Length: 420
Image (tube, rainbow, N blue to C red; front, side, top):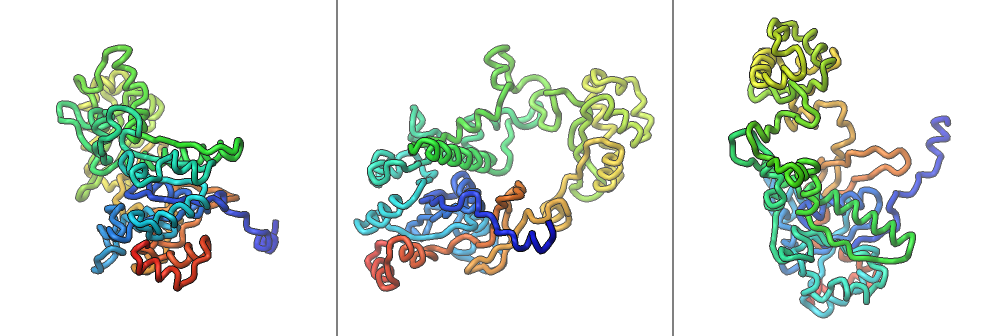
């Protein structure tokens, strides 16, 4: 195909074009899921509360910030998680607000939320009510423990989910207390599971015409990440925390040595190195060219595993005198898996491998800012992230006019009545 032919070829429709999401999601566990759908072409209409100034999502107005400006529209996390979405306000405490929400649900394919269990039910929009409004509606809820079971009423946050599921227990270093990860890892993972669940429910409806309730429990999603380590206790009675375990810098399945993070020259500079087998070890030996690599304690995998502490000390002493990127180049050239531990600035601004992963969007209040892209490349239906997160009620006139036929005066009246 010539360049002219490629240019003239019609652009294929977005993968999720024609799908409309009535979205109550906030933070990251929910908003991160619908961000994926919006990037692939779904129309995600983000519902917010006008009386609480959008504070269903506590990230609104919270840093990081792009400059000295502060306020409801300048939260960096909120902007990052809600790109490509439309934003409207609906006051569900009012009769007119409930009418607007009912009509929006009737014209949507999915209703998505990550409130605590039972919130939509209390508003009069639980799954049974949603089915009356639209029989084939897909309702996806995402909360800490789901809606079924003795913990259903409990409220959670990412680090709590990680603790209850056992992920925190299984992380850290030997003889040290369980360690958190410094951020809500399960908010990210919960969002990914939620996006998958929405897509599977849409596929089922496409095939059968049936809607359904997808009740996602973030804690159960976290449990699935344990894999055989969890079953090891049930079958063998072997706990995750035992002598020498856990050691988050080492690998036991399969066993590898050396395997860890090693210091380099400079302030807080590190490099990750992993030898998968004896062949990798021989390559590392040839690259390092130090006497300690010839010791009998390093001659075989079993020997290196037995002497891992001394091995890590020797390897760390070798890396500590060198620039981390120099170590990376040297070991990669030798065929050894190795990567410098990069700072955000190094990864985002200086690594050519991430080109395109940090798109710039246009935000109505902030201006042009960079956000996270999606880590997939699709040749026929690529994702698009060009618009920043909506300001509070930014698309009221557009959405209510296009979907409900309301005029600018009608929308102004709804605002005056407190319905939006």
